[in-house]
Image 1 (tube, one colour):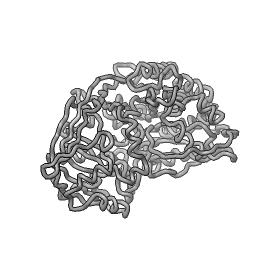
Image 2: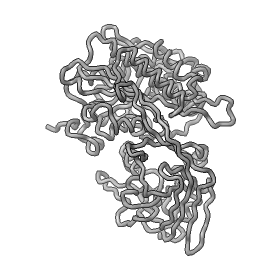
Image 3: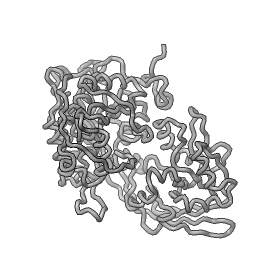
Image 4: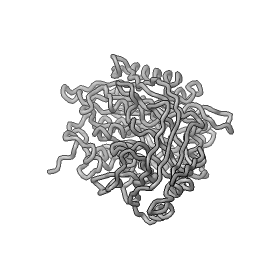
Length: 558
């Protein structure tokens, strides 16, 4: 899972609370904490070397997951009668020292220093790119009819390089804003731009310092490949890209009607700046190396019992990949084990599958278990499945996603991202209540987490979805669950210390019993959806209903 948080280390009290005994079991069918522990022990072991996308170790993890589902009696639902869906991928790396940014102002050329003044990523399409074009400032680069926004109004950007501010207006709701923010590249390409320059703002510096991004300069980019061999979500006419430090970006506005510091002042005042021609041009160039690889999604199905509804599917997802080896020279431990991210989520998915497999009577709808690759590389496996589903997309009625439950305290509440957008909200609340668990509001709406995990690729296809996370309340009165959660992100998230021994050392225990409660809730959500004749639907007032809703999954207004 990708989270952008800046958190300080927090003091913790000992973990002494107990998770309440589940009350929602069907005929004694309750989750087994020991089974969750066993799955996590294997998936988070050093032997799997961090389960990096495309690695042999991730292949082993995928085989383990597939055979576990097979042993439960679930049917293969991947390609060619198998449990696997092979995802074709391209890995691209920037050739270091090849990135150039030259600013042309009144016949004078100024070279920006890489990476102090700017950095860029590789091209997924071309080994060599170079483009020279005029610069046009287009504010945030957002367009939304629903919110009355058009940052490209009265601007001609065809054949030009657009200059955009990072982020989005504070006035927009966080989840909707995050969706609009994800469209910036497409919007620029659709209007004929040949490059994009993003400006790091002082506001962004407070959230994620420019220097932090420099730690990932050598990280490869990935994208899944379409049937013609071209990368998905790529725009061949966008030949150049750069991310620029604000001090260096001021030179881009040397001939502009509004100077960059004044634009930053507008942002502080909550105003969205209007666009204009910058009166200068730039040349952007880079070299990239490419490697085409493949990595598997694992897909299995528990077939439903109803003659009609069995052809509809409740989709349960989790991602199996993590980030492989660490480049941190300060630490002898180089393996990013990903115990919480996302061995825990996969273990809960496998235990959820066991609960379904052992039901005395199968649910009416079928349950499709999809364990995806490439989440850490940009939701790639999930996006590939959403665009190449192994069951008809209109037959996928709902998605419940499991990504990084923090099993370090006996949680007393849950966060259900997306619950306010669809009828799944009540289903989740009822399932949690059966376990004595409350639902809490999103404690960090500015993070827009609903748009930042695998389920969102299905949301964009119109499938109502919910993403569950352990809340910040603990059943132990002497323990602050929020502090434990925050401490995990500050000290262990995407680090080699997200492994079982390190977490036990820091927190006293891993709460596999809390994982069992999480699995019971997950099971009851999917079971409710599977047995309810009315398929889940987007609420009529939800932004996502208007953008992605289909006639068969919209709220009927009486």
